[in-house]
Length: 242
Image 1 (cartoon, rainbow, N blue to C red):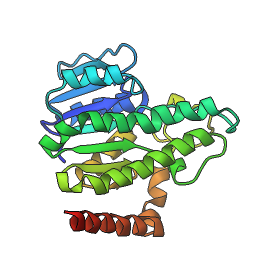
Image 2: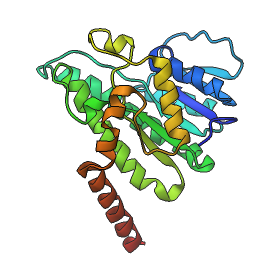
Image 3: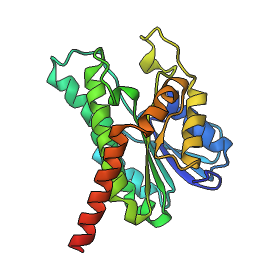
């Protein structure tokens, strides 16, 4: 997937990694970048089309579908992270609504366009989706659910020509990670790593130094092996039904 002359939709594009992804898409020659945000966006580039887009709002998603007539890449980047201890069910539900159901709703809505273009879905996930960080357990749970969803979509959409990519982010210097006193990658370098991984056809993209430290172990590990086995099982089952 070469980004040059492609049309890209990025959610959560007003700041942090989302804003960096918009800039990187333009740098790589994207024909059109749709920037989904919940607030105003100021980018002086005629290739950028701002969209009012809360991924928990069905009506705003439907409105966005009406404004976009072709799409090559959907990047589900919008997310929230709230410190919690799993004592408040509403906090857990809020994380799931944004970080899990949001990307799934976006995928459902834009899948017809992506099937037409044989495009790609990129879900920005996290290392804490692989192993929970107990100071943000609700966030960890939501990213684990989104990771499983990504693996499922990857198998379910293979016949349609749509590729599905998970981005395993480590600590990045964003507002979300402001409270963590640890080394962090810049948003610009993370954006470059995400697009590099997409253009290289990587199913699981490790775009920063922290995530790259586990990349080989993940790709050669038991969980990835199971994913491939289950993917083959799903394909065999679908063929048997057909």
